Length: 372
Image (tube, rainbow, N blue to C red; front, top):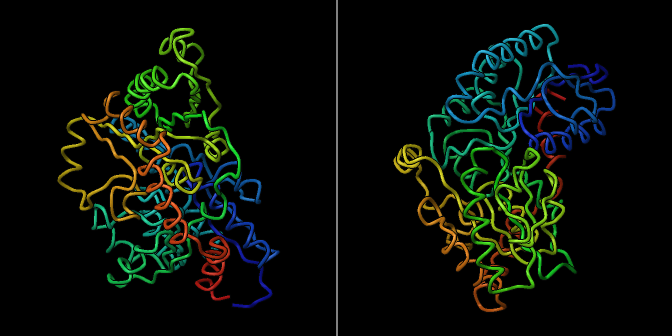
């Protein structure tokens, strides 16, 4: 390939965190190849870096069986459109970020077109659905992983894999000063999660405030709640509670005293911010039964998976009761051994995840597979 030819890249991110990670990679690509152009799927951050949208990425954000079925036709149409554009525009390489249910079929089509694929943020095949390992081996030119243990797992299955470090480790740091009375309630970014998890969180907050009247609580859901919804959940003057806009969790975590979190990426954010946390999660009985048969690891929370032990309390299903949440939270509010053990574990976790310039490493991987 001639080094003077401007390069085009296909890039796909289907949700907000992937959009942020992808924008950092596109920015580094732009520094390394100033004439490079980008098309595909992303949101505001990637668009700001010059991504030309090929469709609506919200199609990839459906959750739950009924939503997935209703969105299947639109997702298939979007897949077909991207492959048609790839066929006509012949990008030098493709950057696919997370969203395996969409990106693995897309990778298959790109592989058939002879377009190399760099996959960033690996599917959790080490936890469940190990059949994805074979698909990655056949369809992906380079797998860029963000957790250290993932490199050995995927390399053992014959995949070209590189550990690049976690992008959050360079963005989120403990605050030198904070609000010692602030407790965050982080019930997730999906409406079904919030409906299941927020009521026990609020009841636990009432119990905590009864014994710690100086505390104030901040609710930071991952999505907007319709006007009046919160007032129905929390009668006036019953709880010292403030509602924040979606996305506020990352800003508010550093310096907070404690967080009560839905299991997800926000638990890693809390750990990197140095905030002790109680992790809860609930799904339907059928979903939990199926997951218990398929999941091969002892923990759900990524913080505990990385630590190799239950570093932070993990309350699932029937254990996610207000009383259990409040007891676990009180232990971490107190300035005792339990809190110190968590903070020490966080420091070790940060050392695991720190790696110089993850976005730059992914950008260079794209140029390598493109033959640059």
